[in-house]
Image 1 (spheres, rainbow, N blue to C red):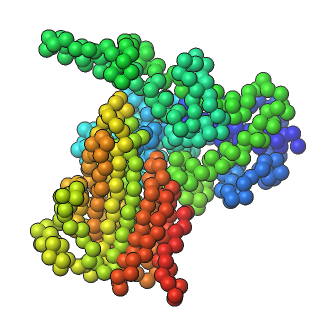
Image 2: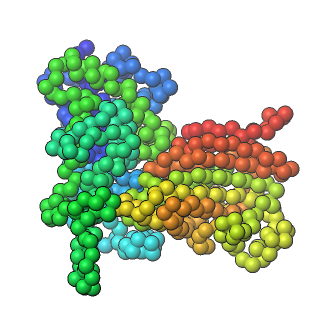
Image 3: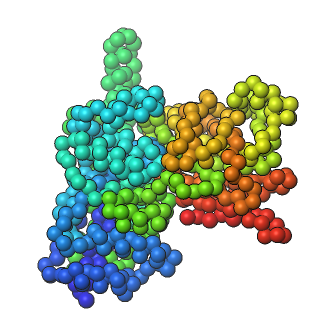
Length: 556
């Protein structure tokens, strides 16, 4: 029995390890096992996990799926399994989650973590000598002509991002044959701190406690703010010499404190707090090797249900994503909708709004989104421009504009309106944010055609994206403290009918919950509306019961 418990806890610790590393810190934790344990004993432990760990019935199917994955990782077979972990900061949003500032490599042999390494993405990018042409959008909006590892998560589809990450990683000096890729956004650290409570980091006591809800901002203040101020001070001094005009260059305008002059080592090793913070999180969660067996048993037993809930929730809302080379494991991921796989088989209406922060700052921390989506089966709800009301609407061509303003514009096919409003909640510019600059891709069913747009130039268009989708792409900018209601109206393909209408909305990894309204205007003018928070992928069905029509929302 003791052997079984040890192996169950070993699996839990491996999961915790991956969570801790992917939260962006790079901490390893290996439990020493002196007993010889057979694969049969391990499998028995997995099969009877309910006997040792209390599992929330609501997530039992997902836990069973995680156990199936763990069975393939925790094996005594002499095979080393390697995983690439992408550490994404979703305060700076990218299509596949957050900006990829760091990554980790993990090697597991016979159920033990035998190797781990955390590195800065910029260091790997300096090793890449081969010039892989970047997508045209990179050159246009980011000024980047060649692909780098830090940009590998440029797609909505996570399997594509995972394969790109492996390809770009192996252009560096340390080539590995990876068995899988795990991506995790920094917001998961906040969730871990909900479990551990406040944490004081040794050697950084003066910074105070790291707490859920503010830890990511505190880390940015410790790691990035000094570098920002240092560069600003140097630029100020340079300008002072060039112009001969004396300026206040050594004072932080926010705090009034003197700006610290940094050495090269200070800049290179500015992230040294991260492994220390991770270590403290690990100790709070599962104790140390020095703890008595019974004490540690009780600690792990108590925390495991909370961690399982955390893992399942973050897999559902896309802050944690997985891809495996083994097709059987990948099928488990797809079946549970864990990998942000672009749906190529969906036949109904479809919507995915995918933003990329191209301003190089952590502005997404301040951006609040609101989504409204309307499908008008009468085809007569084209939007009119009204500058006095703050509208900035433009049309496909003058004839469309004329028809709209004379109330003669009416489409034969359903007319869809996608409106995503962005509120920039920052009060003033600081080292984390300035005006928000975004490049957005809107995915719709194949066969759509746009007629009306608001607050951006005419979108570029691309057919047959992700199998059976049409993509519209555009750039927009938001001033600090402003709200921008971007909008695109387009006709849906003729196959989208009012009868048995269904809509699938896929959520972008890294985006916080989005208040969402879906409205259907039926062919006889009846309006149906539903409101919900977009926290994961969702399907909305129009149901006619005979006595009434209504919209049914189902999270998937």
